[in-house]
Amino acid sequence: MNTSRRYDIDWLRVIAIGLLLIYHIAIVFQPWGVFIAFITSKESLESIWIPMSLLNVWRIPLLFFVSGMGVCLAMKKRNWKQLIGERSLRIFLPYIAGIFLIVPLHLFIFQDYYGTSFAYSPNPGHLWFLGNIFSYVLILIGVFYLLKHKENNLLKKGLQKLYSNPLSLLLIAILFIIETLLTKPADYAMYAMTAHGFWLGLLAFWFGFTFIYTGDVFWKTVLKWKWLYLGLGIVLFTIRYWYFNLKAPDFLIPIETVAWILAIFGFGHQYLNKGGKVLSYLSEAAYPVYIIHMAYLYLGAYLILPLEINIILKFILVNLFTAVACLVTYELIIKRVFFLRPLFGLKVDKPSLNKLKLSSVR
Image (cartoon, rainbow, N blue to C red; front, side, top):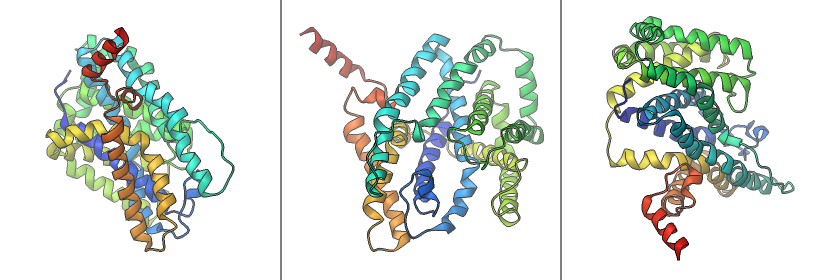
């Protein structure tokens, strides 16, 4: 099992979360945003939804793939009990804390903006993703560790053969097509708290694990054929845009999803597999930023939308406000207050634990 540090995977996680913020802010400027409980601008920027629709078929699946990869890498020095314990602290605890403490915050802002009665509404909200990931760990952990302890098994050899061919690698799209045809989502990009989102995520999580588990075979293929996958993704998006008005048939979009994902991994492997201080900082900050970003997004929309300024400037300012507020909150509060760190998926540093132990002894 290849378990060396993969900086490209860390970068892709950071980039995907950054794109998630922009995507959510774009919803603020769509006329239908209010129907999914977003504060919505009276003036719309509907043209921006074209690039968002391109992102929409792979941004969430990419995070599921990357999460599966992360579990495979984490298994290097952990037995199954340690892995469940770690994932419980880093995923399940922030998920539960977010349901009761974080998600209601942006709902309060929404209620105040539209003058509705205040109601405390604990729910997963945008944190549904964490609930799915933790479920996948519990569902697949037995299979993962069985594969880990039986290195030279037929499944691994079969996957290595599958992943060594650029065209046969695309065959994984068949399972995503079957999932989409069976769940029949009203919209392919409706991942949040839907059966489609759950099963698509489970498939992506599984394949993400196997991409790492099978060694370098997958990476050599996507590195060599990245332009092929990129070209296929562009062609399928063009067809979806021009012929289907961004609403392609259920059998076509999963192929586009897989093509974009494979291209992203190929280009990421070539250009992003480099560490450094910037990556270290952003890699740790990304998780807390993801958890709190909706509260600041709503606050930014609350403050900026009423201003008498150009709509494009409003979009830029909401993006800047959300990003800066999230990073400042992470840097000055979440990162430094030791009892908050685990609620946002961060490890508690040893000096803080030692201080806590000394104070309890006194």
